[in-house]
Image (cartoon, rainbow, N blue to C red):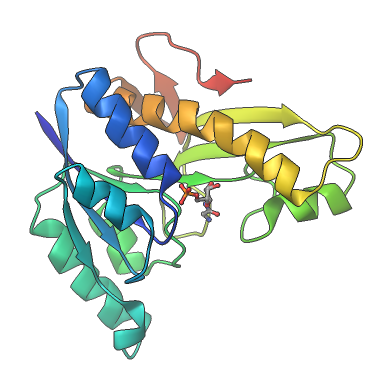
Length: 208
Ligand code: GAR
């Protein structure tokens, strides 16, 4: 039975999708805690209602990133996770933190990486005239929004689309893709070779 800790900063809809999939699909895993860097994060209430331990480590209470990450790591490690899942966790992490969770920390980013790292991904894709947008689940490394790609979801851009309409369509796919990627991890079905991730049971890592 693997232990999962999920980090959020806000709404937490991806966290919700993972919690529900873990319960309904009977994964060999439990969600040990949901932790937020923002005291008012809406997702904390959902976790609480589902009997999951919650914690807040407010980044505003720390003088620098190193101090915040050190405290966050301490709180996370209190739950002894096998896997750390970033689900809309909007913080840049220090190299010491990413090294500590190397190959056991996943993130979801709303773009087809390596394109559009950082913020406002769909708006920037529209500005560039991209015909497809999407989302990527990847292992986290010290470099922001880099790291071996576990799965990608693609959405075609239609006439009249704006940032909101694209976010909504991509989010639906995120909710399918992220739980599957987490399930693969807990079932030991992810193998990283030369920076490339293979799903060892042959399930598709592409979501459309
Ligand atoms: C999701 O769309 C996720 O891809 C994005 O934030 C949203 C969180 O929604 N993540 C990032 O931008 C990370 N850089 P949620 O809180 O409802 O899961």
